[in-house]
Length: 185
Ligand code: SF4
Image (cartoon, rainbow, N blue to C red; front, side, top):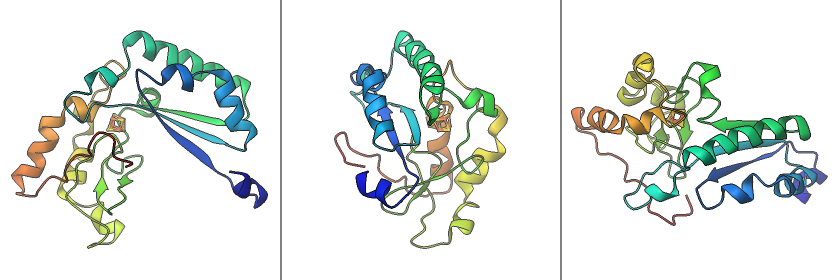
């Protein structure tokens, strides 16, 4: 961060928020230190339980409510942009995945609807990003956007994960294996 500041580079951070780290991430001093170090954007991602055995990493309703209130306060306290996913999505018309608002490319090149939805039927290793955005999976999710209602502040695609998996199965395309717990990705 020091080097980026020295070069005048605009940068931010992406924080995955779990039941056990939400207290740290919503601590004013933690955020202040990052802002003082030059962080201009905070992407606040609520953890979605991809793996069996991690359901208790997901925020409780009480923690989610606290996160929303704290994020609002940070917006008035600090000269930085705070984007909460999926908390802020209601104001953007719901789920932004699959190229409707953004798309995610994994470290291995797999084009996924969202960091919170690690499924893929296209890779930038074998196609251009423009071509990958037209994949069956991503197109269908965009076309069915109206069905992806936000679910009490949670992730719509996670709630509909069996449907997402069925899109891959229908095309006989192998799902990209979900990340393992503890993976650095
Ligand atoms: S997949 Fe979930 S977290 Fe990602 S944009 Fe859609 S609702 Fe939000």
